[in-house]
Image 1 (cartoon, rainbow, N blue to C red):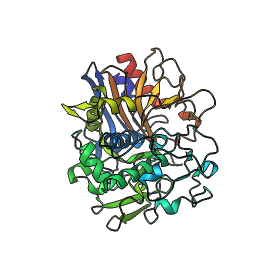
Image 2: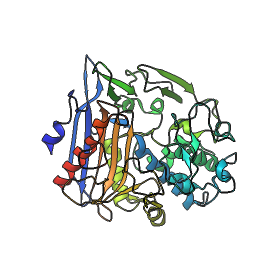
Image 3: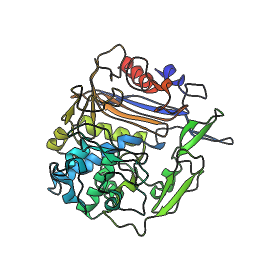
Image 4: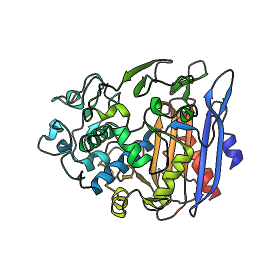
Length: 409
């Protein structure tokens, strides 16, 4: 397993700049490996280590659901309530004006919302301004679908959930989650690099892809060791090298636009902290004796809310066959399997954004699982067919990591 992972890192055509893996078997951590570079620079080598943190992409959705379910336990949110009741405007698909969109719909990607070219609405707009009656939103291309109860993976769903959390708590999304979820998991993770402790900021790694010259360039989080002022959001354009805009949150009105914190993918978290999260999940919502999620909430999260029947959704190339609340299910015999020669079922969530590939997965009803992060791919996984896996519908780098783990287990 060491040699397989070591072969993945480097500057070759299919190699990645850095990666890390932690594996649990029967509740015990039995393997970890951290390789390559968290920051690529000419003068110094900054290695990936267990406390390196990255923008972990869509595993962030799990943490947003943890927060939603805690608020359900407190009676502040009803999963089947019209989400408009938790916003300051009415959210309706103009094609189905009479049908309510629920919190459950948003968390399970059955809301009929479709992503455009952006997932975060600019800070100078509110969600209410963003949603127009004709269903077309500014230049983003975001829109509503024309099918009911149709699964389409949409990051915008989780930006709206972030706004719901703000409206029912009266607290900014990132601040509320840090106190009520992230601190309980004994992490110092954050959605804003500007608010990380200085020591944690210095362990923040960048996410890379190769340019046309074949050189690695940072698509996001290359701050060159200069931390933005506190309570500042740094918006970066992954398609323009060295482009960044900063916005102060001093005038932000809570409950108007939670998308700016990227509840769908913006959590900066370390490998060690992800491992804490995996432990909590494998222990049914309990971490170090603390009940993070009740048994009822845990069961609801891991209950299939949508199952593909051949015509009721978009599977993203076969990856999504069934989805819970912020988690999805992997059948070891299906096209989205993670192991080549072993029929192992998993549940959890993966992440992909800007070159980052990440995942938290475990075998249901066991304490065996893994976490991983890869901080860059040599080409755009969504556009380049070379990214396609060899034996499954996953990306080739995900196959290599998880199949190696399967063989190890």
